Amino acid sequence: MSNIHPNFIAGDWRNGATSLENRNPSDIDDLIGIYACASEEDVRSACLEAANAQSTWYDAGPQVRSDVLNRVATGIEQRAPEIARMLAREEGKILSEATAETQRAAHVFRFFAGEALRVHGEFIASVRSGVDIEVAREPLGAVGLITPWNFPIAIPAWKVAPALAYGNSVVLKPAELTPGTAHLLARIIADAGVPAGVFNLVMGPGASVGAALVADPNIQAISFTGSVPTGRAISQHSLNGMKKVQLEMGGKNPMVILEDADLSVAVAATLNGSFFSTGQRCTASSRLIVQASIHDAFVEELTRQMLALKVGPALAAESQVGPVVSQAQLDSNLAYVALAAAEGCDVVGGERLDGSGRGYFQRPALFLGATSSMRVCQEEIFGPCASVIRVEDFDEALWVANDTPFGLSAGICTQNLRYAREFRRRVQSGMVMVNLPTAGVDYHVPFGGRKNSSFGPREQGRAAAEFYTSSKTSYLFSG
Ligand code: NDP
Image (cartoon, rainbow, N blue to C red; front, side, top):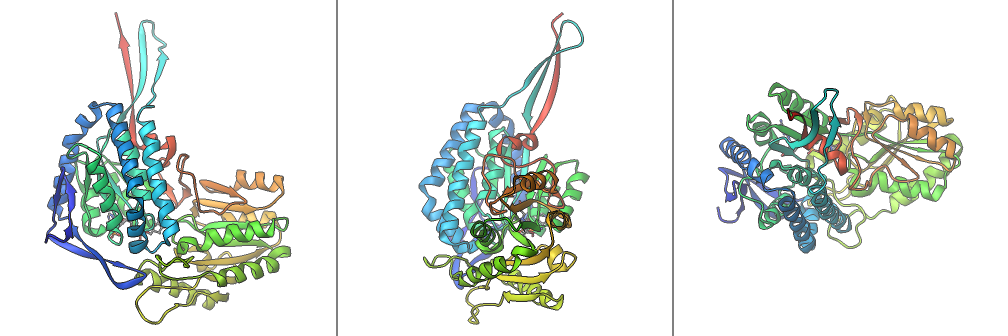
């Protein structure tokens, strides 16, 4: 059992009753490590200890919390090469992307170290004489955080950091495909001196470990990032337990290319938004909505650059696109490539790249001649695949952009200020990018979407206080 990476519960590293192998999607013969799975009893214990430890953590005050978060940021920076390598190995992101994600996680902890010192309230004059009113923000208690595999350190960071900054305690359940990065983060948090029970890590499958966390009566709130079906189920269970809930889910993000766009800017933004990180981003551009007059020139140049992308192992210096994360995700992507052809698209790329079975490599794909109602234009694929929809003018482009059950990030490439402004105002999404990729966001501003993409308050930046605190209005009469 000694080579099994344990869970972290109440300040102790504890082995679970079972464990899971963590394998490298660039080379499935590479066993990264074996990670403990928490039992239901482990989850119960973590939640109870978190609930017991929370008030002491809150009472310790903002300076203590800020100092701990700053030490976590420093710990991430000091171990960045090791974390980035682990991330690339277990998730398949190329090393430069994994390094950038790791740096972002450090920035997030540094930002919330500052926010811990800036918890504001309000003093309001009462309508009654002699009465003062104060509106304060208080922590919720013990919170459960459930994270996906596609940003194995950034998403845990942007949930754990605000939760701790505002005085909550935490039970983190990372995705079973990427426990290694979360485990390294847990080591750093433990080494930063967080008191026992304030931060807990429980690893293992969502259906058992995640579900037990959502059901636990000691957990006051759940923050989840992942797919729509899981999010919907979690929200129903959370509401049954009257827990506060925040969901960040998928996207079917439009990138509109108007005829006056700078072609090189549009191609660069699309190449990045659609295919970098193997398209495994909730903010990926998966619908390219192109005005007819620029369509052929845009498609020709995008196709040329897409087919030139070097797909290969995440740790190889020459790779520009890493592997798909798992066999199941690759099977799903390939099924969507076949569906695109069956729905009448002209498919460019999209095939599995090596027949050896050692890595899950897929050539990026464009689905040309798509129409908005096709399944490939409506369902999230979560792989390196983008549909191209030809439109006549701006009004049609805007209509197609909004013709989706999702509303996370939307982009437009244009040099026309009027269209840029109109798009910003009328597109139904939580984030809008003008002449920028739909993916790639700053860490200090609100993140989230509309429709099926998000539920509950926004994450990140100062907006995070809305979810991780509760408002208390108190009245005082001095007699
Ligand atoms: P899942 O919804 O399958 O999983 C997300 C997390 O939930 C994982 O930790 C998973 O555990 C856990 N989980 C699964 N079932 C349950 C359950 N019944 N109760 C509690 N927890 C559960 O999504 P993926 O990890 O496969 O991530 C890909 C999806 O996430 C895509 O659809 C993508 O769009 C979305 N996503 C959205 C983002 C956003 O910010 N909007 C960001 C990133 C991804 P385990 O995996 O261990 O089973």
